Amino acid sequence: MNAVQWVARWLSRLLPRQERAHPWENYPLAPETRVILQLAAGDALGYDQLHATPERVLLAALEDEAVEAWLRDGTPGAVEAAREALLPVLASPAVAAEARAGAPSPRVGHMLSHAFERTRRRGATVMSRGDLVAGLGATEGETARLLAGCALRAVLDVSPRDDLPEEAEVEDAEVAVYVLNDDTSTMEDVLHILAHGFDLPGRRAYHRMLTTHYRGRAHVGTYPRARAEERLAEATRHAAERFCLIRFHRGKVLGPPYR
Image (cartoon, rainbow, N blue to C red):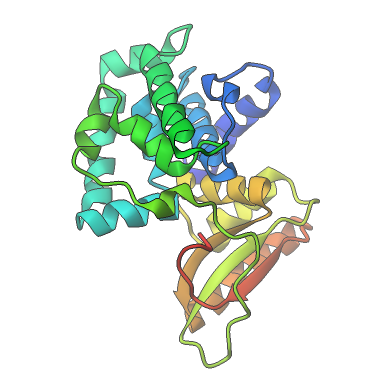
């Protein structure tokens, strides 16, 4: 099963069942936090599981550029090591049974309660990525081990800016490519275009698609100029085949607060 088939499988199951509440729906969430939690919930459905355990939430959080950069800056190779450590834990009988149980795991409730308590202490009104990561670090299991000793940074508590960076100049060696929500393309269309046009892995393509849905645009990636044009041409071809009006932006390469 390729990446798009894998994501489409649980997307078709997730969307008709929006009436089934997830524990995190009781909390006010920043859009980028909602993207992580919805990605984790859909990922669980893709594996015939009812609930996303903290391990699956952390796996989803690693697709967020700010979380990934924070963890990578702290310890080189930490992101790859975290993914490698999480996958066997998710496949273990105990965690799999927890994910398939009728009720959400108490560990998920603990994760969210700790995260929102940090939100409250910051004087904020919505749960940030930093709050969610703090909750993961305080929850029993593999997430606490992986995040032990990782000092949170203020950038994880700040939402990306809504405006786009200015258009890249012709002489710029690198280009930051953004996909923009056109209010007409379906989520499945956007997923297909991102996965095939930019050759993104399944979880990353779905993360960017959800970000486009909730925030109106998403940073697809940063590429050398020639590679960016090649990928954009491929994505445009896939969009034309699906009669999509999806648009892209070639921006100057900037870090936070645009991601």
